Image 1 (cartoon, helix red, strand yellow):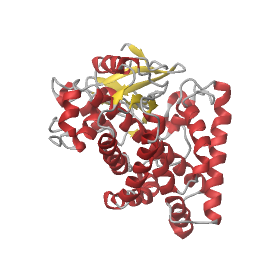
Image 2 (tube, one colour):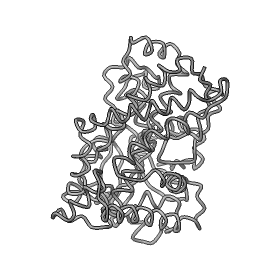
Image 3 (tube, one colour):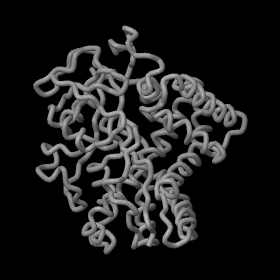
Image 4 (tube, one colour):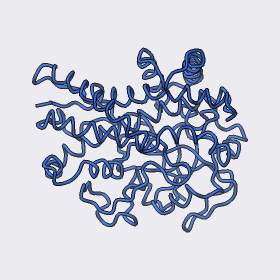
Length: 402
């Protein structure tokens, strides 16, 4: 099996995803830093493995980890071993940690957040409208970033004063270019920041999910301090990064497909279709790290060996022709059915999926209603991917509002 090295600079994600698909449903890959693992790259096999009890999230199953081959200053160590949370446990422990979060993020409860999301969106658009006409605007920094960060912070009870430091630390956390000597301190700083937030909420609880997690731990659900801190970090990280990329990628897709943009702006096609097709065609999450095989697992005509690590390559499987037909590589907002798994599948499906969809469903139509003549300020080919293996993210999104 030929090993495919994932580009730490993410210069050509589409090309890399195509090579992964061509290698078959199970591809042997090398993560930045020279770490070996396998990737599932086809839709059907991904669904199978995401519900296979032989694939677990316990890092102690990983042979390379047991042998001491994974250094603690590996730039992706925070994603491979982020501490105890619902991201790293299975079975009863996973259900225990996930239940409170899932209950807080049901479709019905998320819908109650709509008015607040609309108000935040309007405020962001007002700030954009006040900028000098003809000036290039970084739509990611000025619109796509503040909305989900403010929403998830309000939900979790995180003060806006912490946003600059969170942004700085998460940039290092996700990047493949963080110098190894800075990784341990970055991880420690994240832990310190979120521990301080939890301690503050314990002293002064509020109407937020962090306070609810603390209360549940005191009422008999037995969440440890480590589990509360790591759950807070997980939700803040996932709760804003995915939605930023979803909004940015949807804008780029619409701007590079003017006929389809016309269809949605005229009301011929609903915005829901834009969101779902963006999730499939240019998924916010390119690869999810990392699971481990407790025994040999057959994947198509190949085998994932016992003790090996597995990543799920959502960027590759989102354009799998076996699932989406010969037009899998095309952006098509009229695609039906569109049964993608961009938010995962099975018991570990992302509990924040409804919130991310709601935020994009409010932000995108409001943006184009306010600025229907919006244009990219640079050719799409000049937009630059950030060096992040897990997130399909851009440095910036320069636009002219029109």
